[in-house]
Length: 379
Image (tube, rainbow, N blue to C red; front, side, top):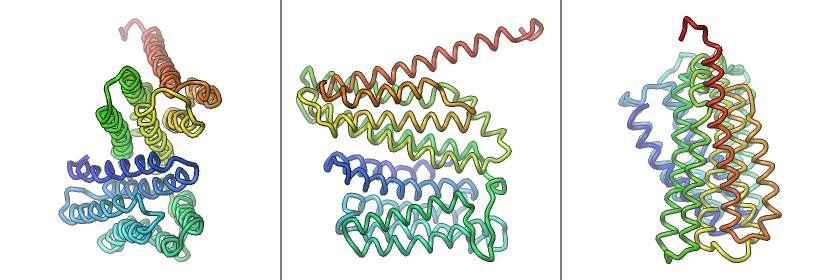
């Protein structure tokens, strides 16, 4: 991974901040749905750039120039996020389409005649198709814009699953995508760090903006422990085995494609956790509204669902601890209305800690069994 890629990611720190603040300022189902669509678009812009640097050398001068240009367009797109469903819809769409179509056009032209160029050419055709509902949505308002943009994203996300079929160009196959699976998975992990970083920033900023009383201090500590636990769960159990699975995969393209879809769920969960942290630190005591209870439990639940799917793809199994934890979080939604926000947050963090502890115990058990199965000559 190059330093330019790390520098590029800084723009998406801003994008994640914009999304979490947007949900916090207008907490509700309609806003959550709209912001999820925007997250899908932001993730898709970042994700394709991660694939772009996987295929091409990010230290090549021409590729560097493209990355810096995408970075500028991404900054414009991120700045337009709070008003994307308002007066800046067209700005958002123009910046987004410039990122997606400009990047792909560069590959098609610069690698003309090579097999990789044809893969990007197919995808470019689908981006031209999705540009129609994107642009039409920017020119209308209300639910019409939401529906048209949802259609555009459905076209873009769905086209990957069917191999970007285009008459005359055929259909792509994941086993033909010669990628570095290790590099791509590392990029996904770093984006998750970006999302966790937003949670840390929110925790510190919200706590520092008010009085350091007992309730707010306790909420601050719980939020920090929650963020650390999320990190522990993701980067703990099975991370070495997952790396080995990526390196030995016969179809790294398929693995990368599945990881693309899975990680957007995980990132959505972390962003919701950041929103929940700010709600609890700002108002740790008193009645817990239904929307607050849902946000507090939905974030960790989405994170665990994404993590469970990741383990299924990488390791071939879903840890039962994730399933049990998601069920426990679902039960906390109605129960949470009887608790103050701080108590509900503490209960949720306890569930997450139980998952992390279970992971540690399972890892120790596997290590112990592995030592027992070694022959005397190997010891």
